[in-house]
Image 1 (cartoon, one colour):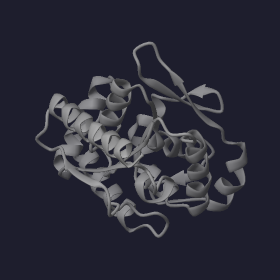
Image 2 (tube, rainbow, N blue to C red):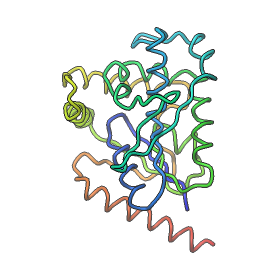
Image 3 (cartoon, one colour):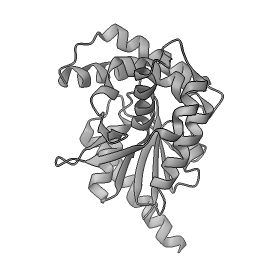
Length: 231
């Protein structure tokens, strides 16, 4: 079994592709972004975070008391647990989306979650998506994929996803949030979003899910065959 790292901008579809790929090849899927969203929700509930900034001292002091896990669901998806509470729906809301990048930019938060992610990925057999999986969390992953799509395409995807969940949202607000997060994620000092030198670049703006699935399975099989040939 190998480790598959999928990185990319917000709402690029990386979580969907990672989850579907994991299901098809029998690997465990880990949504690293959900972990940052869970920490952000915790900070928001305590008044330590907003789009303008983070009370870093208070949040860092609370990190040892934050436990994040995932609960598999009957439909093959998973829900995020924050200290045992199912927070899958609240972490996907616009309030968390507006504050997650500043929280994720706090070095101590990243250090704590990277360590947690590395523990979850011990032994391989995982597909993990995020912003720094192929560059920081698993720099030695056998297969790395870097996903991109236009900001407008990603905002529309996010809008459709949230409307499908019954949430009342505004497209222009989501587009602005996408652009703001792109800037923060790409320019932060700690583990900025960037393509690993050995990652495969995938622009999925015009790909159907079926085309995307087929391409990823092809990459996976090629990587497995290469690994077998080396051994």
